[in-house]
Image (cartoon, rainbow, N blue to C red; front, top):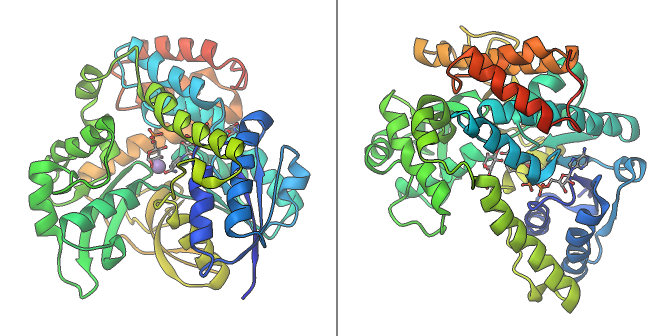
Length: 440
Ligand code: NAD
Ligand code: G6P
Ligand code: MN
């Protein structure tokens, strides 16, 4: 079987060790000859890389491993680029969350003004990775997790139309895992689902077991009472995420025929979200205090002891999705997967140019989207508004336009008025001066 070479872009990410462990656990499906890390923050990456080096030495010394901050070294001779960069890192995520909250508006990593601000930082960073890949390994595919995936996907569609990039999200997978538990199944792969929407903005319309039995009634009954909190939560979910899974109960009530993505709570219940937020301590603070500390602490312990048992690095089960995707392309498996792709008529009554999240068959030459058909007025209205926001952000980035960005923030369903939008935008410009193009 052919062996593949992978570069993880954003080698210093908190998710990198989990992805490496997951790649190791999946050698039978996607055999590797080389793993490289690339990051533009050499010091941050070094800690993660030195720990992963020890881990790889123990488990798979035959896989060649290296890490670098030099694009040519990183992107030459690779088959896949697995990208998960965060331009501005957690301190800027903290700004994205806290600035809107100061104005009484949802402060969130990928939704509302915070997601828009993050988009304005990410577009340039991801395009840079695409260009390195195209230059040094033109046959490679980029599997991109970097957020905000919806805005990044619109930017790459428009500005790098030929690029072999697939944008993905693990949220539907995470929710489907919970649905499987609710339905009494072991694995989400024992279900066949239908879903449509935008990234962090979608609905399931059908869930069946592999024999074709309808699982919707059972799951619906549970969601109506408990949201996506499963009967026994073995996963030790953090409190803030647990609130989000529980709130799905209220999101579901708006359209009981479907099952919603949890992210819809930010658009449909923004007042609730703001009331329950602490403007001095947001999710970015939680992540810095927990995940980041834990991952870097573990890596340092491994480096000091010279053995991986000294740390507590955990496999990222969600990321097995990225192996499914790489294997689908590498071995033409035609697996059915949810991807963020250009609509192109798949949703009949929706903008053909919009980037939508829908099931696709994936093979050697990429994704083949499945037909969704017509969608109801409620979803269509919400999605049209949100797609317009995402397109305006890319317009703003391309044209360096203050006006377009003001329109984008004003149009977000999380924002009450153009004057509030303007006040938020003016604060965001100051906070992002090192990252955004200068607006005129
Ligand atoms: P992190 O800050 O720990 O890691 C990001 C890394 O990217 C950092 O080491 C940083 O130095 C590096 N980086 C920033 N800009 C770069 C650039 N221009 N070139 C190269 N490297 C650069 O962040 P994290 O919490 O581990 O998340 C990483 C990314 O993955 C984020 O974008 C996050 O939103 C995304 N993510 C997406 C999904 C999804 O569903 N799509 C799921 C999980 C995480
Ligand atoms: C889910 C989403 C990602 C998002 C992440 C945030 O996995 O699909 O797009 O980045 O949650 O999680 P965090 O723990 O960083 O708040
Ligand atoms: Mn996501």
